[in-house]
Image: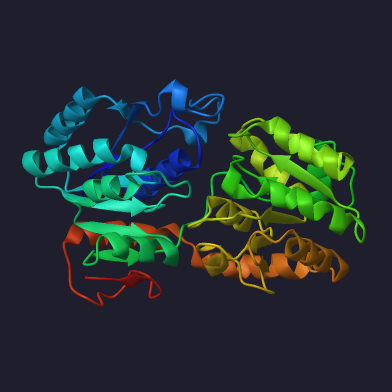
Length: 392
């Protein structure tokens, strides 16, 4: 089958670009002919909060062939993408959707794909309604989805959001697969030696720092934790907010000596060391759909403590692969981390993660993509892996 993917992808960086790269490789392994169309400009520099949009790692595993011809705010480039799809004549066009900012471009390209090819249109949705809502989001998302034939959602909350906008959507719910491009877990003490970490207990907060990620709540939990258990909070990720406000908060709480911040994007080759050095990964989010950080933690056999928002509690099994706590509650977060250490749950939870993570395979996702191209419809279509759900 001929498949075209329209998404952020190498040489752009970030979790969604990495997801696209894995998707490309898994589809190719199934024997499909895959072309990836990505952005020559994903965000105008004025709107991009990070340091760079481009992949700086030299890791060859990240590299996939892609055509950077799409400008998110350049309508002439949308025509060029449509023309390219006409040349390719794919059986299926896959859009990776995560925020309404891209809806005008994606919706226009979908309309062109309808006119210029016989392709079916699939959206793989990380979000439908974004974490940080803005006026017009709903209208833009409906425009993007207008010409879609099928959807794949990756959590129950995204399923609910999709059906609120497209009640008769033809869809499957398939859990977010593991990120498996970061190598394997290594010995904890060896990882700590590599990172020059000497602390006995290490909690990891990983990924881009944005308001909804709840780092401020984690910092507010620290004074309570430190009265009972000495830990080091390792904050690893680029700040998409003012870093100084978090450092100032830590200072005001008297916990500066108990945190270590690495505020740069982490090359793939170093990711395994940070997770392997940690006992547990904390995700104190105030909102979420799903999180690739949990899938990354699972790949590297690390338990998680998460808040009960979005689909996080669908993946982290309370009292089995971690703890699930109420959102916006530093006291509950502190209590969970204290329990984790006082009850010595690290080994038990990690063993359970090794079993639980088998559910999150790329095979199920590729089955779903093939289902979208098949055109099969109707309620209660048998799911590709026996666990996913489908709608009309």
